[in-house]
Amino acid sequence: MPKPITRGHERRRFKRYAVLESGLIYADGRCLDCQVVDVSANGVRIRPVGRVGKAVEKCRFLLGRMGGFQAAVCWNGDDTVGIRFEDAPETVAEQFRAVLPSDCLAAA
Image (cartoon, rainbow, N blue to C red):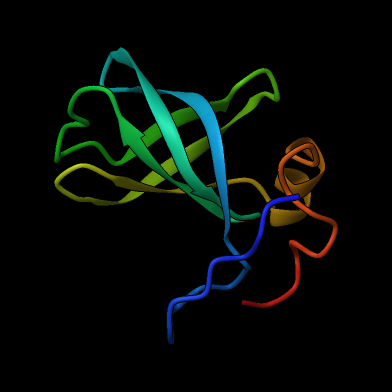
């Protein structure tokens, strides 16, 4: 079972969990493979293979065979990208129940 990530005070609504999963991000007319660094009921931090354009705001994110969601790019760093799901956290938690523990909707 994944363990929650704790790093001092952060502006997070939900607990984040370190995972080792692959994903896909569809943005700006192309598809990029990515490694999922951590996941919460509200979003993911990914390490894409290739660059996500700095101007990209909307995308579709797929986590392995568990399905995907419409999402927004929140931040775009040197090698990682923060993505916020547009669906309700309860919907995300249900769909990603294979990687998110039952307490994932608890406040961070």
